[in-house]
Image (cartoon, rainbow, N blue to C red; front, side, top):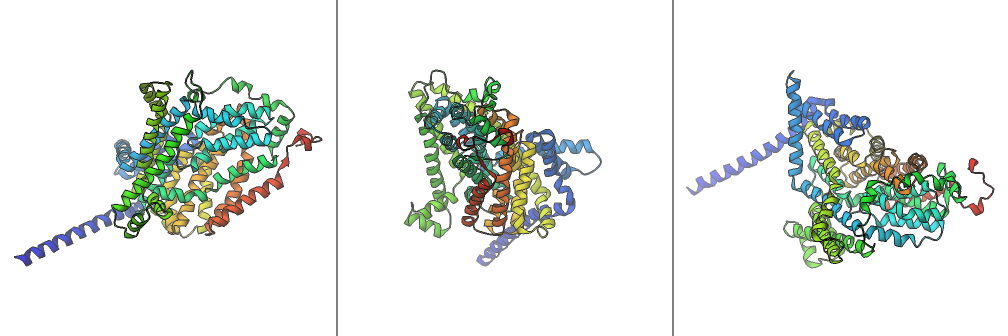
Length: 583
């Protein structure tokens, strides 16, 4: 009887294991079968999303129709097109619900909204304005005014919109006094908005970036911590880093080139450039009004330091605790021993951060920071707790569009995965594209899409589900995949930085009181200059496997040398005989 029970148990185990293997094989086969069945048609969803983004300039509509096109292909079973369209729409709804129902995705959405609430509380309490005013008092020369504007942009790291709308109006009187052109001010604001927010580990961007990275790795069955990958991409964000260095170099050397130099010489000599923004000054945007302190509130720097400091410190603690509990509940004996023997060593902290759940940790810290800000505001009688909650919720509303784009991007990723788009591309491109060129190709493609659409978010949502699987198929080494991942993020920001229809480009013009077309015209040569160095001295060497500690310094030197070669002084004292028309 005992032997009979043993046999039954063994047979049951074998059946269970076989069924699991068959189920897994079936899942893999469905993707491969679809890739073989639909072939080039699997490219339709991303292509439709890209083309419509070019035409409509609306990324939500473009992503939604791209998802429906994939659902149409999967559900088309005959000549009844109307019925298939209905099914495609239902498929869109189903994928959106499934995306939002995923705990990881839900955590990302919640932390994005919570951070938006904190930013609004800080603004209404006068914290952001106080920081900008304190910095503006330190500007004594044209050089120091530009460097302080740059530094202020670094401090407002948590949101690109807040950067554009806070720094511009605060620094504009100072830069005018130092005879710095409005075009130059707009460029510094724009170049420290998205590039800084895209790099920051705590910002309104990180939820989108980490969410897309995690979803892309899940689509190929690779178990990687998305936040850990995000951290590893930071040294490879060449455009972000180089454009920030470019501002410092040109400010210190007081050298410019292209249309910007003419504007700077006009401003130094008291020309019309300083007055060009008068009309715009009368049309300060509603967004800037929303970031102004409440009536009667005196700006205080601690109104920013305490909530933002709470957010940062809280996030670090939450990351550590999340990773620590994950490791201790797991079966990785090496990591467990590290945590037991030296829980606060650098290695232990690195292990904890790599194993943390970023979505939950950031939501926890943002929620706690919001509570601290509300208590702080109420205790100083700036508002009541009820009013503080309303301000917090109003801040969330500004980031609803980010959440909608995220849900659409996750849904598009889902339909692309089911169709086998990545597998189709891998089969046809993995052997034909030289490995070292892929990061550069991704960077350029991201720039083109972002330039045409005016949005970094949508570009990341379209490209990330394709770039990571393709990079992994060409070279599964994680360092190579990380370089390609960073190319998606930086390419999207580069194109957005050049685009005349980008929201941050428009807001930077408004914040600086600069004519929008003049801002675009003077900024594009600088963006293209840094973009070219990003490819030639950044992604091509990194694609060959050259370590970043060699690539990045060489790229920085290239920026410096390029400014020395192409740039000419705008110091009026040393250029008295220069004709502005010939500059």
